[in-house]
Amino acid sequence: MTAHDPIDELAAAYVLGTLSAERRREVQARLPTDAALRDAVDGWEGRLLPLTALVEAVEPSPALWTRIENAIAPAPIRQGVSTQASPWQTWWSSLGFWRAVAATGFVAASVVALLPSTGLFAPAAPQYMVVLVAPNGTAPGWIVQTSGANTLRLVPLGTTNVPEQRSLQFWTKADDWNAPVSLGLVQPGQPLEVKLDQLPPLVPNQLFEITLEPYNGSPTGRPTGPILYIGRSVKLT
Amino acid sequence: MRLPDPDAFDHDAALAACARGDRAALRRLYEQEGRYLLGVALRIVRDRATAEDVLHDAFMNIWTRAATFDARRGAGRGWMYGIVRHRALDAVRAGARTVSADEDQMDALRADDPPAAPDMAEAFALRADLGRLDDCLARLDTPKRNCVLYAYLDGCTHSEIAERLGAPLGSVKAWIRRGLTSLRECLA
Image (cartoon, rainbow over all chains, first blue to last red):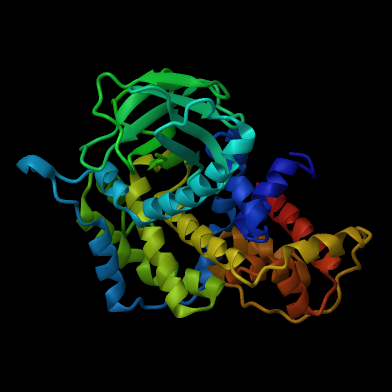
């Protein structure tokens, strides 16, 4: 490397911890799609990790494990079908998830307030809207709107960098579904129209997300890669 | 204080079990690392309740992201420490301790010409069991070493380090930059 490799310097500052909250968010937003930055961060994590051995151990309070245990307890499975809770299922009930939803709700409100001037949703007001936000961020990346009875339109608000040999995949899950359903692959920066013929009608609070998957989509039919954008449907009318 | 014996506990296997939904595996990871991870978080956030919240959130993260852990990109133990440290750093940077805007403004007013390293007391006792990193840290002069350790272990911002060391902000930034460059070369 050269003495001033900006990617390496950014990664080092991120791992060392000296970046501001804003710059930390920028790095975290880049990590899922920026392999060079990710490699540099991994390198610094490995280099500096031995320093953690200088820290005195602190015994957690007994209540802490109980909190963690309760948070990862499997949600009740419907229709008497008993399966082991997958990480995916428990993910839906995780704290980080709900925090992401809270952030999304806030963003949705602010975007709704902007609508009359942007005309994005003209002429007919959609019944539902979803604002998709990066899990660690608050800036909206995509908007989902209903157009017609059973058509969804996914609209990009910016571009998304996708590494080679990877694809963006769009998913949804209502609260009472056991697993998310793929709504198809997404081209970065391109709108996508999705027919919902095969799915139940949209409900309030339905989850939508875009994940980074192997080229041409998840091989398992379930999300396998990092979540790039996530949000829940808000009923507008 | 201790360095864990990497042979004693298979973090990667426990994470793989978490990915399969094995909650007992998360418990094993917690019992193995919880007190050390809490120590790391507490040094950064400096508040017991906040540190426990950080550890809670980090373990949620470890549980939900276990399936995405990629052992080719680093060992599972380091992956867990990274999650805890970054949670803790996010918590303090989002709080009142940061003065980044002022830092940037002050930085813009300074020439990038730091003074030579002054005499300075050692703020940290190093330990030989840090492996090669110990040798490389020992080669840094004291101010650079103090800066790196205050940042990494205590989660200090540039301004906080400058205050602790009684040194100009521009010097702190330069020491950190040069210290990291030296470490990278030494560890290559």
